[in-house]
Image (tube, rainbow, N blue to C red):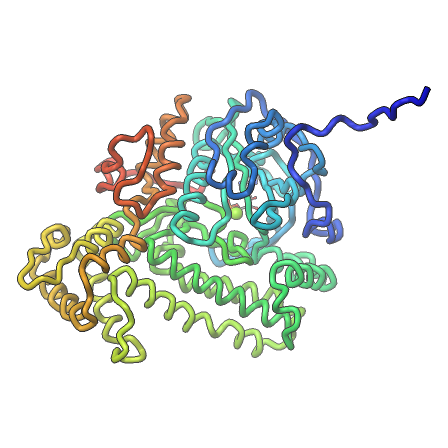
Length: 513
Ligand code: AMP
Ligand code: MG
């Protein structure tokens, strides 16, 4: 009697992810990282999951399968996946060369096939790696919730960003200023490549062959159109320059402060990366510093665009062994200024509901003056950034209309009135229609942003074991532009769109995470 072939491997789970074995780092040598062992956590439980992301990536069923929690806790290797990878990078921190850094608490699980193309899944806080230096490789629940909420909120705002699929919590104690508990965030992106990866092989490892292999793989995989350029590495630098310029204009227009724009936190794909002590502006202050540890204000809101340009110079330095010609490298960086200025002017215009006038001065000076003046008045009156722009959508061009909902935000009402007169004239000049303009403005001026106090409330409840506010906030921030967001268990979203409470002024968001 013929015997049945016996299975030699464990049966594949009913719902398995499709892991690719020709991933970006799999094709590169061992010089790019290490594969630390799993460091399981006790008592893993779901804190939050991003259903919209799971749906987009076709991961919904897997997320509900028994494999998901232990895999995303870092307790178990997923069926079909290999051991995780911690990559090595270096970087400039606060303007100073910091030498070797690396994924000190991030573990790349691998790449999976999704309807949006191959995606890397990375755990943050999964334990120590050879790059942890003296730190513990963990992340606390507080910072993990902030990263989860903000990644998904930024995506919904239309900003390029790494995504967050889930947060898993554990009672494992983690020592920061006080003893907190651990959490692991699952991040998703086509790539987590940083400027610092290139700086590492140029300076720390001083390994031009490894640098070139990395740059070639990057071009082949993420920038295939540039492979045919006369000088592909220069083309790469210029493309990253342009993406970064456009990203920064989006950050500025939303009042987003990253907080730690070190070169190791700059994405090569132009994504928002590494959410730490970030913040959205409340009362407008161009010099606002969201990172309590940034004593010099290097990463203050108004400085972000020039810091990004500085960081691009560091990337250029990292590519110099391949580019050779420093004048050519500087020329590839030069478009940053115009690209940022153009994107920024477009963004401010959109926020004011202005369309480009055919007869407008080509350099946009008249509109720039209008923008500069309102920002000056907002700063003088410490006007709430998000609320001002949202309310400005209700501005009426009718003769003699009272603009109280906007006007009341300012201390110097006469100065506002003078500005409003010019703004109205500008709108009339392009035959702006109030209702239509309001619709357009409401699509770029969010009603709901992740203000620190909203995150803080969700965090405090989560630390007490109730994760419902994290999920509620997550859902709300998926509809940031909706006047009346649809939420099953949130009857009144209005308080989420209001001014920050007085206690929010005293929130200090430190680097500790
Ligand atoms: P960050 O300022 O959060 O971007 O982190 C800078 C560097 O420190 C990165 O290489 C991180 O991987 C590493 N790092 C931060 N926190 C920890 C931690 N708790 N354990 C290990 N490495 C960490
Ligand atoms: Mg970082």
